[in-house]
Amino acid sequence: MNQVELSAYIEVLIDKHRAIVWHPIAQDIATRVLNELNVQNREISELYSVCNGLSLKWLTILPISDGTATAFTSIQLANQTESSPYLSGSAELLDRFLIFADIGNGACAAIDRIDSSIWYQDGEDFRHAPITILEFLRTCVRDLEAT
Image 1: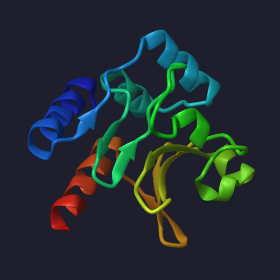
Image 2: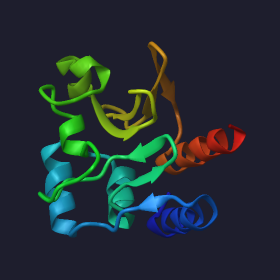
Image 3: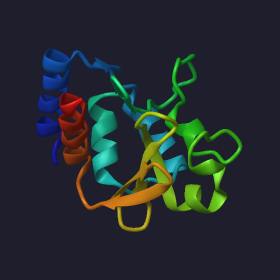
């Protein structure tokens, strides 16, 4: 995935699916926050350089909080054991996974900090999806179109 391809796909989400997309925040803030969250994933960095999250029906890519009020849980709050509504706030799971998306009904999608693979909640299960972030977005859109 690259920024051009991701940016083009996000434009499709806006035009065809009426996604709400937040403008990127200052790169230095995004870099600082992702470093504080111990993110070593190039794709998530590229995503936040294109947009600061998005909302499309049941899918929300969590925004980075820049200190201003937000109507959604930020990526920072989603990854703190004290405030995370995801993965039962498990310190062990939140140490291993970076929560980056709310996929509805209190479920999340996350990136494994060890191998950068994507995982998602499916009911009580936490499933591995060996796909990129762009493929994850495309899969979610296919699921949205099917419902």
